Image (cartoon, rainbow, N blue to C red; front, side, top):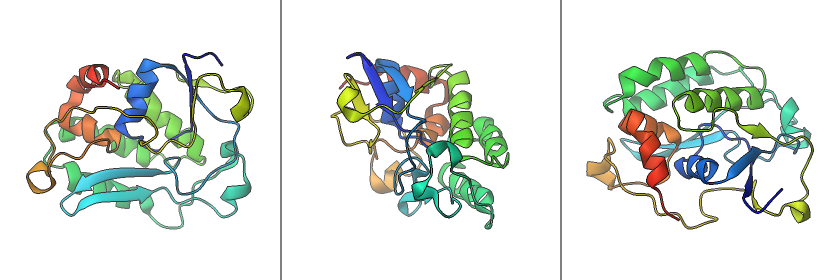
Length: 204
């Protein structure tokens, strides 16, 4: 990797800053690591009527010992419907909800077997809207931390580098004020096509 390259983990409806990084650097998604729990790999965060809410994709047992390519999604519980209810409750009154929600619903009801496939379908959808690069690069082998010359943000939580995220109108801003760096869903439903310009306006 070169100094202008960036290494990220896969992510489920990633935070807004994740997409800014993908535009700023030549980004690669690490697809040769083992799964790490309690991370953005299968978690997303939105703001609803009761404040911040984190929700996660349930995975089959034994995931922590598995390569990320083999981590399978559990459908023992009807989580897609639950996630869609959370999203609808948080963004049902947002300006672009009616326009984009059917596409989000289609993705979550597609019953992907593997977490990585679900996350890349989300990235492909966002890439079609200009929110992410159209063709996201994947690593071809596991990258040791000592071999990374650029930014290694595989443990990214949104706090590793200072980023100034400009405020924009949010559904529950009147209750909690502006909450930065939520899931990209927040930008999508609140700004729609203007989200592309917003991502390019961010300064570190």
